Image (cartoon, rainbow, N blue to C red; front, side):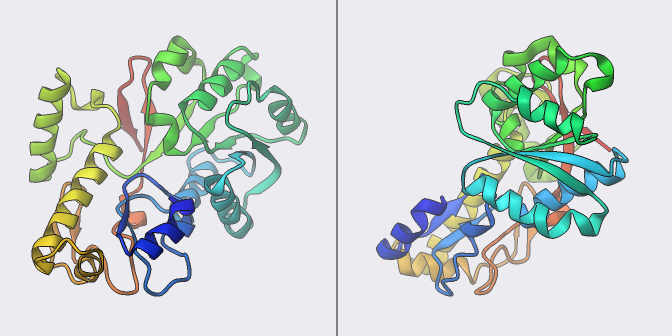
Length: 284
């Protein structure tokens, strides 16, 4: 998404992020930005993860494991600006590349520096490596992990199975179908259950992706109707002038303005556990 911003501006085509969280997506500095987001934003998402560590986990020293990407750098900027204010020390920040095969050295360094939790940013492949390595350690060395949502976007449960039971692993989300009584959420849940042959809403894969993409598609459709055009400049202008829309995730009143291209905010944040069979279960 970040690397596509310049091209979206050149082509004058709206770029709609439905699962990107890097702040740069909607903070490019261009006052006529074509980027819009119906998704979590690191400035408040990673802040919520830091708060989770200090309040629910009661931890004052944690370590960060971040990918060497725009996503990781966005998360790092939040950690550097917010951690100390929240009473959290982060003595070890480990930068890794996609495809790395182990976190053992960084994890050991975290323990040596008296880290008591891990803030993890990444996807399911890397999360599976970390969980397996933690599960192999003696119980006193198994640190709790507060993870970004890329870890819950695929097949993590299939990669680690029973090892999940040995690790406290909490994942940030912006939406859940579980216990959700919003009318459109109920309708979408019924459709998702039927499409996937499921009976339990907790088993719907990637619920944030489903809900955010659905709301984003409806908002774009509304913009096209309002503009009576599919021309990029016209759709962009209409997106900034949408009426209130009662969506799957929330009531957007409105979703975007000329100075705000983010449809969601920190009020949408929740945390979930992933069960060995892949269910995403909200936790307090």
